[in-house]
Length: 416
Image (cartoon, rainbow, N blue to C red; front, side):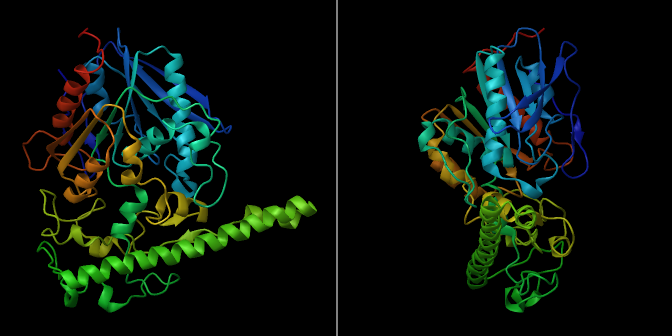
């Protein structure tokens, strides 16, 4: 039996039960194929022969609410940081793949019979990208980042896993941002500059003051989505120009050895991306309807949050923008990677998700290449909370389905 979560904390913080008394934990520092240092925590119970890996490109999942349930079910759990944990200013997904690879190599060396990554939210695309690349011969892997830097993936040891679980995966950081970036921004230097006819929070375009649901016309939404792509394309062009400038400075330093050229190479401009919480689906619940509550991942007032400091991709290097945050340039796109995911796959959709909407999930599942593919949905919000007071949390419901799926495919330790 999986250990249930106790309840729902504020926002994304879901309270979980304690780990089994028999749990032992150890902290490990690993060196990646490109020389970076990453850390992970291995929690295990007596007799565990299968290890479930929780990872995310940007977040620390050491205390993820599913960890106790997985341990109680008889699996070991590996939670690992990437080099960009809690600070994604320079998050390059191709480097994050090398971080994941270091963890997979470590776990194979520990002698586990089966390794199963569990990707929640952005961890889903991270593991989909990893599995796509791991299944390829070295020379066929992505050779350069979208910004043109060598990835070093070709020579990296990248063990293929024995299965994968996707829990509430969104389409990828870039695709997510493409859906919620505000296309009405008319001046990238001014957080308030706006084109009125593209403002999703203008009543003239269909916005209603919360808690009432807004109502946008098909014509407005078509213009809005096209304008979002146009804004991302403009930001891509800016990022590529800055990447080219840094590359020219590096080349000049190789020729001259001049410290001034070295300084230019080391001082890239940081992109400030204003207003990135403006997805019409968060305030018009008739668009791709589901059991989701009004509002975005960041709160119940996107019309206000959009103008604040919180949001996806707000500060980023040009290289990180192209690799992670651009829905047009990033390779870390779940649908793009999914055909290469051929290991046994469980896809768990949460019916109140505010980041992966039903149509997103249908496309992602449809693109997966696994012959052994299970798609199911449980009631819950994106971070695993309950939809209604008094209900089981989404994490509790998902834990039962995940551990049941694991038990049918890998060895789990008997209850101790």
